[in-house]
Length: 628
Image (tube, rainbow, N blue to C red; front, side, top):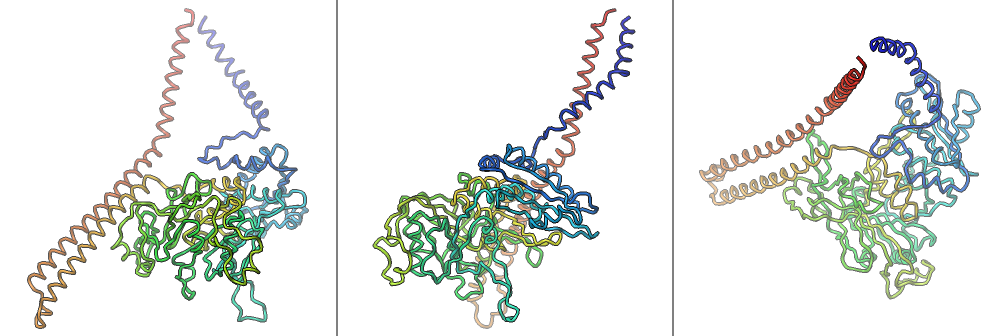
């Protein structure tokens, strides 16, 4: 009887049960097809809109339209775009959902000679001509009332910045007035316009530095001439970039600007690489009078070397060289407690100075960027002798040096007795003299002006016929973060900080650094012993008379042999350090490789065995319950 029941249940399961299960699956798919369900497993939730974006969307006063133009259905779309476009469209739907009715998402397919193609062109969306003759559009425009912002082409290589670009565009259309930034610089940061057709001898066209182009997207930029006596008093932020020969009148205007609550960023530099073709290029340029009043100091003769953050590159003989003047700064260099620097990962400084707190003036002194412990401030002229000479005499300070500092509070004037006795001052700053600030302000001091030059952070290239500029580190982000904080837009800082330029194996980097410290110490020992042996040989040479100058004495021969043996022994030790380092890294790599190969199969096997045991126990229990 029991066997008959079992046969009937099996027949029902096969004849009726499977179709029922199939119908249930179809029904579930139909019911949930309208729901946008997903699970973002990326480390920083890169495929979900951030809390900062949600806050921006919640503050939209009316409605914002996002019109997307993407050419679908054409052949030979480049694979990177074909893979990227669906992710981007899904991400834009996240804006629609997060906007709660304030975002209107519209997606158009601008086919050849279509009305949608005409709209795309009118909005400034750039079409890319493909080899087969088709034109590919993939851009968007953000519209609010009579204001619009266009992303001409959404580049797959900039995917990690897309949320910032879109949220930035939304911020711009809902904020009609741009903050004002004034820039005072001796450096040629604005480039040159195209020469007139009838003046071929004029300087060739040169684009402005990329940070200027980036700032112009959000701010109204005002160029201040070095010969000026003052500037607009209604600036929201002022830049001083390597300010050579700044007049006392202009210095006074800067002083009073800060005391009236104006925000300031100062780029000083003990040795500018960018200005090497300019007479007196290495001369110290910084507003020392202002620094002194603020209680900070930068020694004009000191440049920083740092073997903890030394930049590694291949020389002409394909050997890896470390340059301790060029600082490849990593996350440990950045202050995690300040939103400006908290999420920075990599930056590049070239021949930086050192900022020091000289006295207490009541201002908050907050380092944002610091060196490693393997650093030392040395005479800036040592730059000319190269890394090898620096390495020979290097002695770590065992303390972190300040490379960028934020000063906050109520500032005191560098001109406590009143304006300088100069007739031009009367034509300059128009407000009454202040000996002390009437409201709090903030000043960022950066000890390297070259860090904002393009060569230190951005790569210019052409992608599908379009000029693309791709930052490869956080130099620009540091500047944009500072501008947004000082002008009052913290949300964009939090969005820009998402995503990573690189994801290094932290353990491998740590092993390399520890070995480099040991290697440096032994190399210095070798150099020192070489110098001692050379000095002994020279001393023995001086004791000879003229007739023995070209004869090697027994003492010299003995000294030479001892030196060769010692040099060989130390070289063996250096090779051992490198070999052990490689072995440690290889062992770590093997562990990761084995984990990747066997972990998932092992996990599936364990789950499979567990499930088999579960079914077996369940079947046995069911069998025991059946009536005999």
